[in-house]
Length: 114
Length: 113
Image (cartoon, rainbow over all chains, first blue to last red; front, side, top):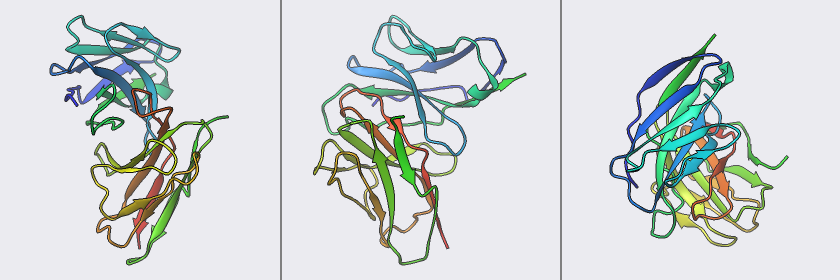
């Protein structure tokens, strides 16, 4: 699976949009971009994923550049409860010996402040 | 509500003992996974199962064993052969192993007495 690069930490004011970047310059054509977050001492929570089109769900939006070498997770109206570590992961869609495995890097610590 | 239940939340083990961590899901998912997380680090895959009565080793299977006798259950046994078992253990499930989001339980924190 391709490696990802994320900023170590970011701050955001409550009520504002949080934009979390991720670089994945070695992504392959069959690799998807996944975003998870983890609040201390809890299991990771799935947020969103996509292949090449932008995606939106009730939690967030995912913007993937046309060359697929980077993406941005957008939390439109951040709240204090969005403070967590956010992980960007690229993952093979299927097949091969590594299918199913999620490779978590260090992630971005997002702090939402009042 | 559908979800994944891990128990217990905290577990203590004496040296030389085997312990079993429970993972149950009511999401009707075929695939289940066990990960280990150490402080300040990402998740590492221990075992995964695509379907009932089938399971495969992940990256760090030594010292662990699993079974998958029922679709909804995937218990993990940490054996005495695991030299450094103190960690946060996470169970996950997905509809299939092929590009379906994995959903996680809240974990079990294992400590050695």
